[in-house]
Length: 224
Length: 155
Image 1 (tube, chains in turn purple, red):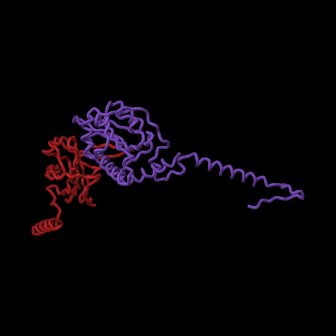
Image 2 (image 1 turned 30 degrees about the vertical axis):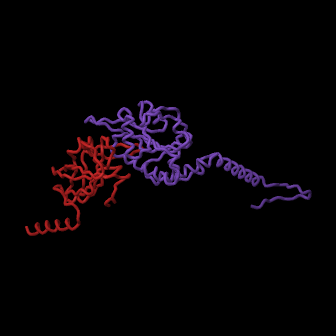
Image 3 (image 1 turned 90 degrees about the horizontal axis):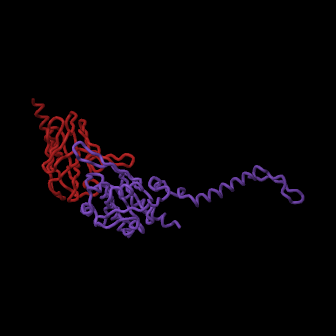
């Protein structure tokens, strides 16, 4: 772009093309503003692959108290310092829960083999705490992986934790007296600062979860 | 008459040659029936299989029963908007020639109240009931599976 300017005999730049100066100023402002935005916005460098999974901003969780399968208290402290894959289900679920637990077992195995195993824990929360007592949960989960954590406790504590994680569930009664649960089948990812960080939704495969987790983990560690 | 006999013989020969189970009275073949091994205290297990309607009419699966389980219901897992639910199926219709897979995350037999714990390698006989009144007793094998079917799925 040619700047038409006329040099007067005194060397002063006179008759600057105002439109061009304004254009340059606007372009400069846009560049500076855009640069500032990219430094302060998380979404600009989120690969499209992750966009459906990452929470817009990690959400800090508030206090809750549940019991693990050994009868020990499980609260916010036990979510600190490591990643948590959390899934809500119930022990008498015949299809979805065993399928998901088997997938999580594969995830655990894959993370374990690359040395990242200890930085993640796998937690199953019962949406039927009245029937899934700690010992039952222990026997149920031990079948899949002895290191999985099973949580149960007061129904309103389970409800409170679920609400924080945008997890929904509902008991459905049948005429025969049998009951089932409709429940969120996504696996929630909580970061080492006990914040809801991402959610993995159906179809759940070990490869996809491990892949996404590694990218999420790397991004998390690169942040100040 | 000769034609009918010939056709029957041919069907038998082809069926035997193919190595697949012969269709039951309803004309339905049950491929690879299996039960996913569950924790010993599980109150409900899942049965899977592939149904193939080899007859020339529509046949529907309308129920199942077994001495090994208190009750059996046909269900379909459906995930909508992130929520998983099980939808009870009164009947599963199969068009002539159709194949329908019962597999993890989809159709399954919900096997409630197991009379005893079942481990990988055990077998349980489940009788499938069809719309034409036919009853087919099928031996389901218990398998320890990962997330899906332990063997390659038939297409």
